[in-house]
Image (cartoon, rainbow, N blue to C red; front, side):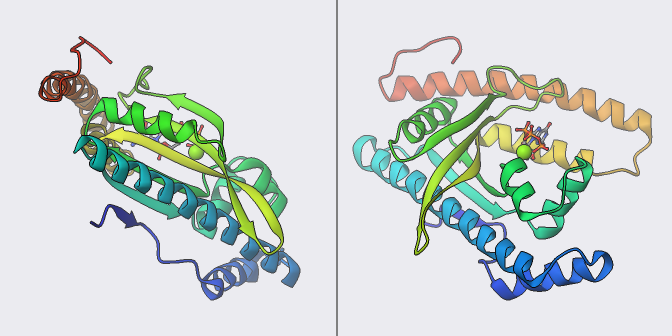
Length: 240
Ligand code: GTP
Ligand code: MG
């Protein structure tokens, strides 16, 4: 099958401990206890990420069996690196501590769900959101309300339970649901954003073109969705 793509290698205590010690050699802010606590926290985020991606795989399999349709094209998942976690806390002028990560960062565990059609984005996310053992903490629907630059995706932050010997822990997982076309667009926009050596005029020109592309892709998606609905016997509508 191979529906899930891991964007990081599996959790390794030695890697996390080494990264923290390396950062600490310049700042000297972590005690041995802090490092142990950080590792426990990352382990919980990883567990929640696996719980939620398994739920998504099960939904995808069920759709395949019931409707002979795979709503999920593929998934990507990643744990934020220690370096990015600390970078984000610093950018926001937040304290650098385990409590601060727990209280302020909701995207340490992240899953991107790339769906075939826009209807799939909403059906998969609604089925996941209605499951009784997870909670929806926040929804940002950039499909109904695209960002100024043309970015579209549905972002949902879930709290999922992880069961350890110490008991039950609810951990946040950020899930980005999008179509193949939205993902195609976001990859290029992301690349443009990090290409800092372009002249301002070129950057502005490309940003405008990308905005046009976002609108064109949206139109193409509506047309293709309608064909797909017709093939599958669902009623046609102009938009979703
Ligand atoms: P940050 O996590 O600090 O970005 O703030 P937030 O949690 O309010 O962000 P939001 O939910 O709006 O977006 C979180 C993630 O969505 C980002 O880390 C990106 O992966 C993705 N994203 C958001 N906006 C854009 C965009 O304009 N372009 C691209 N390519 N990705 C975006
Ligand atoms: Mg975020």
